[in-house]
Amino acid sequence: MKIEVIYALPDRQELVTLDLPDGSTAQQAVEASGLLQKYPDIEPGGRNKLGVFSKLVKADAVLRDRDRVEIYRPLIADPKEVRRQKAAEGKVMKRGAAELNAGESPDA
Image (cartoon, rainbow, N blue to C red; front, side):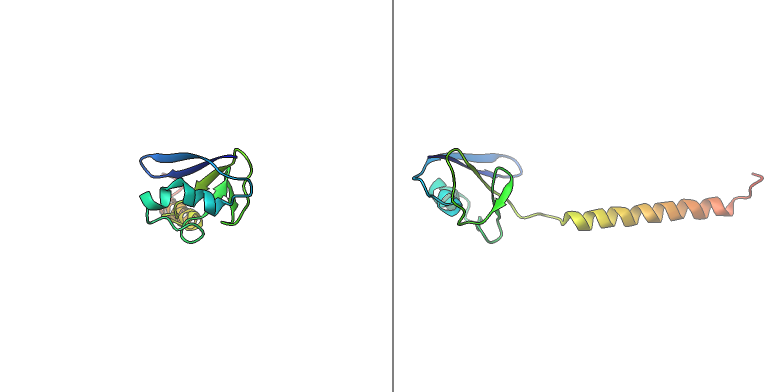
C-alpha cells in the first residue's frame, strides 16, 4: 500500500512516499521513512504526536492504502493561554478607556 509520511518544519516540509505491506502501523511508517535518522529530535508518541489526515492517531494505528501520516511538532505556546492573555489585555484597555472617560465632565 502507498503511504506518505510528512514532517513540517518552520521553513520547509519533508515528504516521503513509501510502499508498505498491509497492516503497517503509523510508527512503522515513520521508521521506514528515514525521517527519524534525518531528524533525531523526533519522538513519535512522545514529544511529537502523529496524525492521519489531520486526525490524531496512536503510534500503533493500522494504516490504509493512500494514508498520509503526519508528524506534529510540539506547540511553542499554549493557544488557550495566549487567548487568556489577549482577553486580559483587552479588559485592561477597556478599563483604562473607561477611567479616562470617567474623569471628563459631561459639559466638555
